[in-house]
Image (cartoon, rainbow, N blue to C red; front, side, top):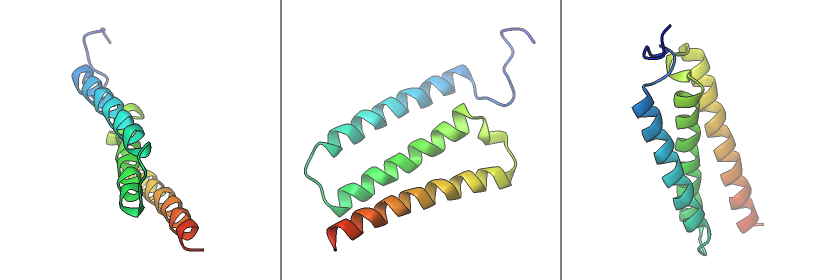
Length: 96
């Protein structure tokens, strides 16, 4: 395979660069928002951004985009469960 051919399991270099830049912007955004005094809504927003970032990493950099549906569903479900558990722990901490 020559260096100009694309690997069919990964996206194009331009797409990968765009996703990487988006992840950097999302990271800075969550850091800046997290520095503010927040509440349940802000925490839910930050967890939502983290969920989207996790999905982008898995699909773009772990080549899950072309994986069987079972693997995509397992990873997506795992990401949702982790975010829900973190949100639940936060909520329980607010309401002892």
